[in-house]
Image (cartoon, rainbow, N blue to C red; front, side, top):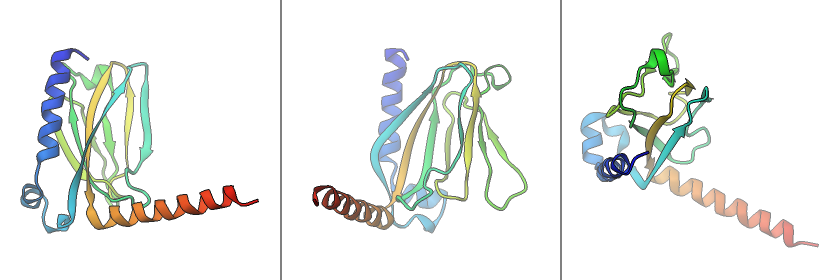
Amino acid sequence: MSKRRLRRAGAVSSYLILLRKSEFNQLIGSELIHCENEKNAMVACYPGNGTGYVRHVDNPNGDGRCITCIYYLNKNWDAKLHGGVLRIFPEGKSFIADVEPIFDRLLFFWSDRRNPHEVQPSYATRYAMTVWYFDAEERAEAKKKFRNLTRKTESSLTED
C-alpha cells in the first residue's frame, strides 16, 4: 500500500474511531445504547492469489462486538475480474447480500449471529479496514470471564 493510501486509511480510521454513539443511534436505533468503539482498527490484506475467508460470525461467543464497520480501500475494483466479494447471509432471511469491495465504500452490519459472512476468493490484492463497536456491558463481562479463566489455567499449571 502506498504512503498516500496509508495516510488516507489513517484519516478514515480516525473518523471511524471518532464516530459517536449519537450518530449511530440516528442511523440504526436505540439498540446501541451501550455501544462504544475500542479505538483500534484492523487492516486486512488479501494477496490476490485466490485467498478468501470462510463463513463466520465476528462475535460468536459474546465478546462484546455489536457492530462491524468495514471501509474498502480498493481503487478500480472489478468484482467480475477480481472477485473478493463480501457475502452476507442474514439470519432468518431467504436471500444473501453480496457487497463488492469498491473504493471508499463504508459498510455497517451486526457482528453477532444475525450476519454470518465470508470473503469470496480474491484474485487481486484486496484491502479492507475494520473497526468494531462494542457493547460496553457485554465487553466488560467477556473480559471478566477471560481473566477468571486465565487465573484458573495459571493455578492448574503451578499445582504439583
